[in-house]
Length: 96
Image (cartoon, one colour):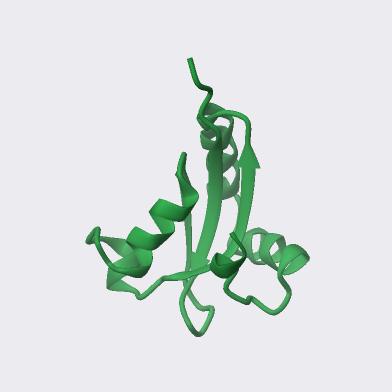
């Protein structure tokens, strides 16, 4: 049986004013869906398409636990998390 890995990711809009947190087992596929607005919802409504942060986990369960930790934090903590890895808020999608 193959072990799926998991990802937690943070997206923002062009002006870095909206932060979205997601979890997935296939980061490239999920980001493509966000960027193409294939799934209607928060990210398509607010044009949140820029990948600014992500973490990789050995299991989707671990990724879900981490997603809940991040979501439970303040907006400042989320912004600080992004700035520590990606101070310029550049789109990391091309680096995957």
